[in-house]
Amino acid sequence: MGVPAFSLSSLSWSYGDYTWHTNLDTYDKIVFDDVRNNAILTAILAYMACEDPEKTSRKKAALPTNLKTGIQKEWPKPRSPDRAGGQN
Image 1 (cartoon, helix red, strand yellow):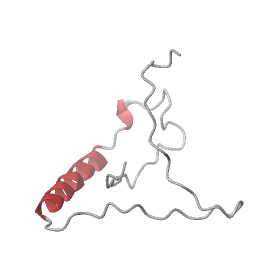
Image 2 (cartoon, rainbow, N blue to C red; image 1 turned 90 degrees about the vertical axis):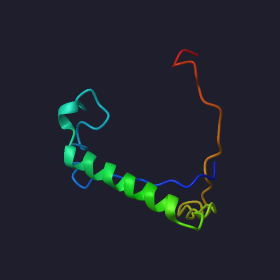
Image 3 (cartoon, helix red, strand yellow; image 1 turned 30 degrees about the vertical axis):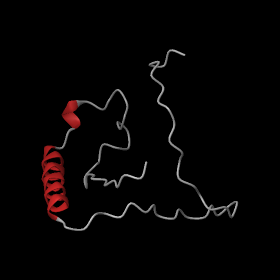
C-alpha cells in the first residue's frame, strides 16, 4: 500500500528450526533479551522518525528478475481480507 516498513528480528532464533509456528512454539521459548532489544530499537526508530525533518521515500524498490523466466518480479496487489475465519 506504499507505506514504509521496517523489520526487526532476533540474532539468536535458535528455536526456529523445529518449533517456529508449531504447537511447540510456547511462551517458554521467548528470549526476553531479544524482546527488550527490539522494544528499544522500536522506540529509537519512532523517536528518530518523528524528529527527522525529511520524509521517508515512498518509492517502491525494484524487485529482482526471476532467473528462470527472465521476467521482473512484481509487488503483490492488495486484496480484500477473508473475514470468514476459514469458514467459506
